[in-house]
Length: 165
Image (cartoon, rainbow, N blue to C red; front, side):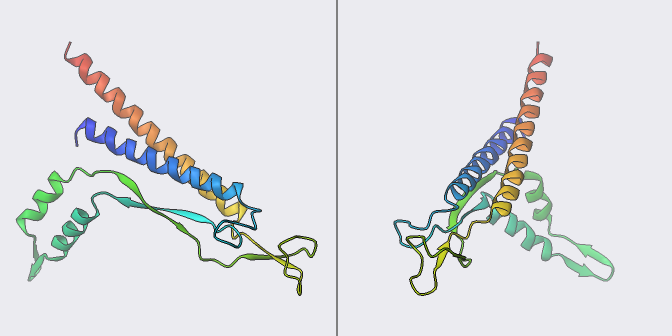
């Protein structure tokens, strides 16, 4: 893997985790929103990541599974090793942002303007503080790891240029 490709992969991870952190911030900001433009309470949003090279990864897996076994010897197709050697990876991207289908929380508050007149319960968003904070910590650590990888790649590029002097 060349250093420019490593930088690009780290950059895609930074962008993806920034998007995830923004969605988590939106979820936390709307934890008490009972009215939205679509009607009803706010629904928690979740980010779905996808690797850009999923198709090539699946083809490598299929070729690995296509290995033939003759007695105790396992024969692999020659092109499998070639594909693994040339597979450089291409990073990650945000595939989509989906809304959670979990049930809304019911809170008894008959004085709330959105309360059910018969029962007094209000449908509150399906956002859980602890889940969002845990997701935020994971995304933050992943973002920091990508920054560290990008910094290490930059340092390697700098050292390589110094060797050429």
